[in-house]
Amino acid sequence: MGRESRESRIIPRWLRRADRQAAAGAAAARAREELLLAVATAGFPVAPAAHPQGYGCSCDRIGCPTPGRHPVSLAWQTQATTDPEQIIRWLNADPLANFVTATGAAHDVLDVPAPAGYAALARLAAEGIEPGPVAVADPDRVLFFTATRGTPDDEDEWWPCELDCHPETMDEHPGLRWHCRGSYVLLPPSRVPPAGTGGVRWLQGPERPLPEPLTLLEALTDACAEHLAAQPEQAHAW
Image 1 (cartoon, rainbow, N blue to C red):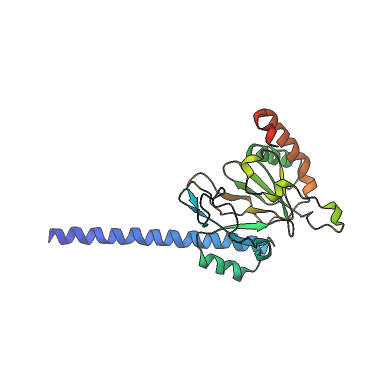
Image 2: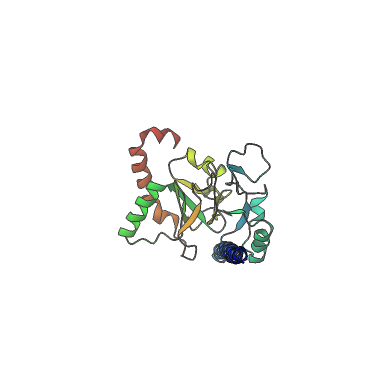
């Protein structure tokens, strides 16, 4: 009788713990879906990306140099969409997937070191300038989403640069990087390995109006210059 009584107490506790875990997982999945659909509603084209798998990457490339930071398909630029039904299909197919947004069509992204980004945000607030959507790529970058200059009427006004061709190698570029046509950034709530070291989260959500990039540029470039002056050993990488 005593043994049966103990088991009757243990089993309900186990079941309650499993129910709580299942509810937490369902809530996290809903939160991911809501964040991605909010991005699509804002008009940012979305494409699926690889995700962390232990210390490595979910892609099939042995020794992937940028685990969890790159699109799944080489056709990501044409694949990127704001169609909510397609985004949900991708989520259902791979609930762990990260997502990127293709820049240069609906928006650009100004990407700076975290210390420079926080300093620029303080300066913009003091000057009464609205920075628009801002994401943090923990632990070391801040992403400012702006209106695009990637498809000007005069194509001679558009400039490519190496930073836009290799958006995943952010640790090699401690200065400002302008993601425009042909580039991408990871979207919240993306994760990067190793587990617990960081990911991408919104500081100010995608529902905010996109500012013109030139309204932010002075504050960002000044903050980057101050950041590099404080770390001269990194100046060669800019």
